[in-house]
Image 1 (cartoon, rainbow, N blue to C red):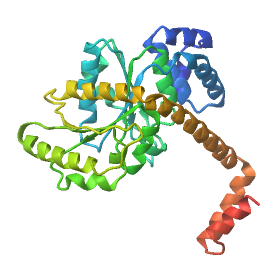
Image 2: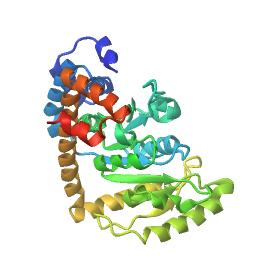
Image 3: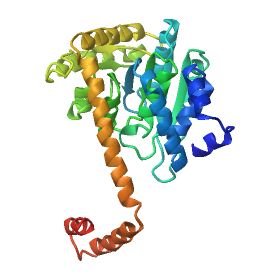
Length: 329
C-alpha cells in the first residue's frame, strides 16, 4: 500500500484536498492509500488531511454488511449498490479482504466480484487488506469512511470478512448493521449463541430462491421468534427479519425501505446522533490504546526485556503475571 502512493506524482496537500472534495475518484484513492500507509512521514500528512476534511464528512449513511463466508455478501452488495445508484445515490463500498496470518497477503478481489458495480460512475469500490486488525476491518477503515463522505458519497457500505465473534467491532463504526444469513445449514439458530445477532439492526436471509425458498421461509420464522427474546436494543428498534435473493434481485428494495424506516426512527428519538458521538469517543480511546502499545513495543530496551521474559516463561521459571509486573516496575 505504501509504495502505491509513492509511485504517484508528488502532489501538494491542498491539491489532494481540492481533488477529493470535487469528488475525483483518483484523488479519493490516493487519499485512502495515504491514510493506509505505515510510513511515519505519511502518517503526519494523513493526519493533516483528515483534520482538513473532517468538517465536510459525516453526512452519509454508514451501513455495515456482515455474514459468514459463502453467504453472498459481494453479490448482495453489487445488486444493492446498483439499486441505490439507480435511485440517484452515490455509493462507496469499502470491502475488507482477509489477509493471510502467515504471509500477510490478501487477494483484494472484490472489484472482480462486483464487476457491474465497479463500472458504475456513481459507485466507488475500494478493497483493503484486513491485516491483523480485529473484526475483519482494516485499521484505517474509519478514515476511509470520512474521506468517502468528503468526496460526496451518500451511502457507505462496509463489507467485512466474516470471521465470527470478533467481527462485531464493525458495529462501532456504522449507523446500521445488516446481518446476512443462510438457511439450510442444519441449525439455523446456532448463531444466537454468538453476540452478533443481538447487535444486528436487520437480519436478511439471502439465497431465498429455487429449492431453498421453503427452508429460507422456515428460517425466517425461527429468527423472528428468536429476535423477540432479545432485550430491546439502544435504538428501541424491533429488528426486522426478511428474505432476499441477490441472484434473482428479490427483496432488495424491501431491504432499503427497512433501512429508511430505521434512519427515520433513530433520528426521531435522537439515537442516530448519540450513536455517532459514542463511536467518535470510542475511536478516540482506541487510538490512545494503539498509540501507547506501539510506543511501548517500539522501545529497544523493552524488546530486550520482553525476550528475556519469554524465555523465562517458556522454561516455567517465572509466572506471566510476575513477568508483566516486572516490565512496568
